[in-house]
Length: 107
Length: 115
Image (tube, rainbow over all chains, first blue to last red; front, side):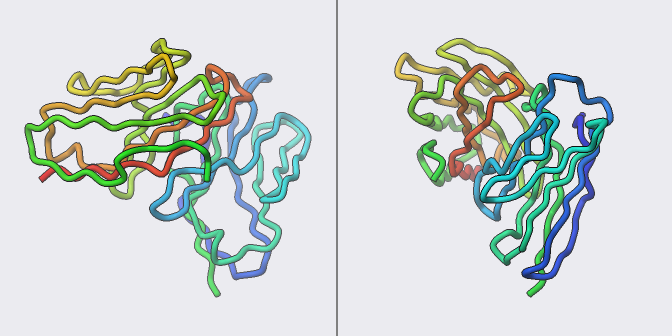
């Protein structure tokens, strides 16, 4: 079973920020938090990962709760091309993929 | 482009047949992973190889087998195919053996249709 819990789907308007939540209450101290996304008809692609501190890259930001039991992937300005299934994965369980969150972007 | 290549892109075959899917990892990556994704389903991990050796095994059927060659490319063999084997098969690679910081890079997938 997946070690993370995510909402099945979320909707957002184009050009607005999107906050995708993930709960991982059983996370261990050595578990990195990874986010991947899968665009329609494509393989998953890496988005971002982090351990404790918030992380930023060109694609997104990752906000990690102080107790590390949850995290939030932030897309600062969603476009239609960000419509995808977003997966939150724990580093020590990278072989276990849940259903992810299907992000729907409304124009 | 992740740098992971998979061939063929599409494969249509009949029940009972055998097929081979091929994967070339990113340059420098030592691990190869195989996943199955049925229609509108999540990714199901099948098997991982690290530097030529089997590293981890998921719910891979006995009719399926895989190997990683000295040049690090990998092949997934599916035999006695059934209708239910129709799915997208993804290969991924990573630099190391899959520790917590390792990142997987996925290929474009092979779509297998069994008629």
